[in-house]
Amino acid sequence: MDRAAEALALRTPVSAARRIRGLSDRAIAWVFIFPAIALLLAINIFPLIWAIYLSFTNYRANRPNAPVENVGLRNYERVLTDPDIWMAMQTTAHFVFWTIVLQTIIGFTLAYLIDRKFRGHAFWTTIILIPMMLSPAVVGNFWRFLYEPQIGLFAYAVSFVSGLQPSDIRMLGDVGLAPWSIIIVDTWMWTPYVMLICLAGLRSIPDYIYEAAEVDRASNWRQFWTITVPMALPFIMLAVLFRGIENFKMFDMVTLLTGGGPGSTTEVASITLKRQAFESWATGRSSAFAIILFVAVFGLANIYVKALNKVKQR
Image 1 (cartoon, rainbow, N blue to C red):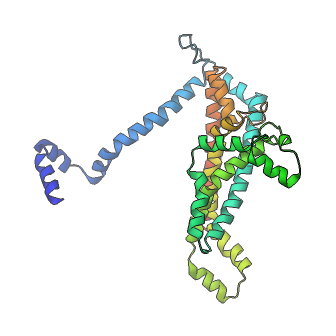
Image 2 (image 1 turned 90 degrees about the vertical axis):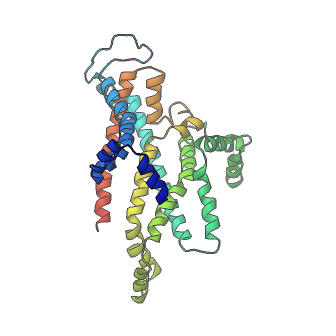
Image 3 (image 1 turned 180 degrees about the vertical axis):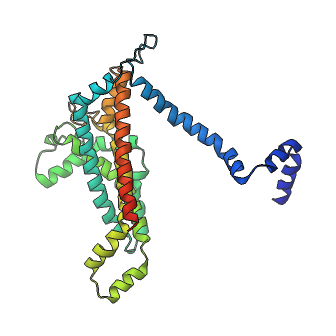
């Protein structure tokens, strides 16, 4: 290793070696990380600035040669007063709320059980993590087959429990059941992710705290509510933050299962944005909608992170 470094140093031009020798450690670090930072800025910042610019214009992507006019805040006004967009936002909020609630409760419960380190817990941990490792396309098609009223196993399982005919159980075609069908699939797929974060929180609690509680003759129930939950709460909140941001952007699973139907029952904000941008070709208005979604997610996440930091400082 030393010989290779020495050979590399000998092959370095004298002028370059002098310039490098005169740089500080911070300057050398910037030399190495600047290309990555420049690439990230080009990929993330430029599209954001371009979208902000388009949101104030009447630009349409299917008419690139048409004159572009500045329309001011008209696109934002049309987005904020559009009842279809507000309906899509309500649908998105419904998905985000119920998926977070179910994934947090089930994920923390599974993490608490696995933390007991019962016999075979490693095997069952691996089995539980399988849904998270699958592609959303595979999961969507798999569950679409399960939801089929004629041949799907889900309909026959519900029929066995409830006594209803399998043909009457149309999870993807019923207005009341279609939203819950997507919530079930997302919960099945991403609960293991929440479980891993909660399990990391439970494993970080020192054993001596529980030993001190046992000396004080605290019951298991009291230990759970006064030690386990408070000390694992930052990890639980972190899992809620990650899943909330991801579920707010939910697109692929809804597209694969229902495509936003029946009607517009499961049309979330991302699907509405896609339809305005690539079906109606209202590029300026869809850009304004995208900026509003970005500001909403960024603002809510910022408030949530501040609350998370307060919890961590307790």
